[in-house]
Structures are given as structure tokens and as C-alpha cells.
Amino acid sequence: MRILDELITECSFTARKFEKGYSVYRSVPWADLPLESSKLSYPPVEYAKLNRCNLEGQQVLYAANHPSNVFAEQKDLAIGKRFALSKWQLKREAHALLVGFSPKEIDTLVIGSHRGFKSSSDRHAHTIFGKMFRTKGGEYYPNTASIANLLMRIAMPENLGGGECALAYASVEYPNDEVLAVNFTFPKNFVDNHLELVVAEYVEVTSVLDDKVDHKVL
Image (cartoon, rainbow, N blue to C red; front, top):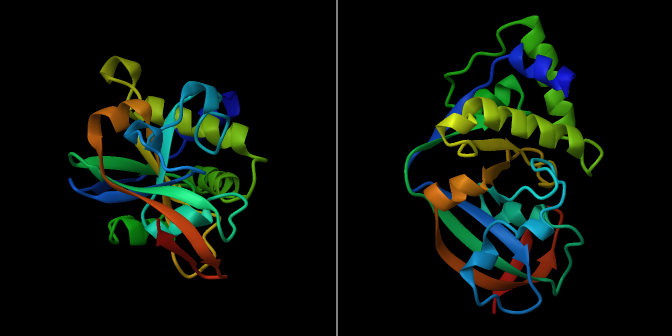
């Protein structure tokens, strides 16, 4: 943890502004039709297991910038699997810290206002973050979850309401390397205060191809 603290405090991070009404998408595996909207949001504490951006017992909502990306993130995706696919919108303008992206990707995300990392320590730290956040599987989950928590605490300390900082990172599961698929992590406080559920569909996967997933609404 001390090493991560040093890496984070020695480098700079870029935040991307997202306008009020910006939409994100989430999918939840579901054998039967969900009848409560709360079940489409962050998981109950007992189901909040260690993941890329959350520690054990920490409630966050994982979402993506496009519906097709949410399926790529699902484990054991197969024809016949059923999901609750939901669309959420920001209730106000918000910022998300970008972590694990390359300078070129950050330029794309912030419309060219970013020009690389500022120092050699910057480049070194972001190279390490990029490797951790872009490695498939859970090998680096303890590291990335700790980084995510440190960043959220620095950006929105407890005495200012804590847990209201969103994070954005690149999807490592999206099959098209030419598309920058973005995932988001929204802590519980952020979801409660700044996100609203717009619509939800109960869907079944009908085909799984290399570059897309087809589904039908039930």
C-alpha cells in the first residue's frame, strides 16, 4: 500500500467531464425477471466480492459506455444466458478520473486537451497502472482495487462527502481492439446521489460472435 501511495502522489491524473444526461449501461445475470429496480444497481454487501475497483464488501456499480460492452465483461457468456440490461443517466455534470489509459487514449477521451504525462515518474507510474488495469483476470485485483480506493479518497476526501468520485478505465474484455471501450466504477454514494435508472430490459443472448453479441428482449 505504501508503494501505491507513493506512485499516486508522484504522478498526475486526468479527469474527463461528463455532461448531465450522459448515459451508461449495466448488465446483471438473471435467471428470472427482476421485479425490483434496486437489484439492477450496486450489489448487496454480502455479494460485493473483490473486483477490479472494489474491495471485499464495498458496494460499487460497474457500468460501460455502450450496451455492447456490458456483455463483453460477463463471465461464461453463452447463447441462452439471460440478463437484466439497464440504462442509467447522470443527474448532474460529473467528472471521472481516468486510470490505466495511454496518453493517446486520454487525448481521445478528453478531446485533445491532454498532452502526455508530465514527468518520467508520471510515465513510470502510469505504465504500471496500465499493466495492472489491462490484465485480464483477477491477478491484480488487490492492487487495482487499492489504487481505485486511494484515488477516490484523494479526489473526494471523507470530510467532503467521500465516495462521490467516479473512475473510468479501459475494458480489457471488449473483442474489437480498434474500439476504445470504457468502463466506469461508481461508488454507492455517487449512485444514490447522481445516477438515475432510465430504462431496463430483460434479454436473452441469441448469438456470440467475435466482434458482437446479439440478444432479444423477452
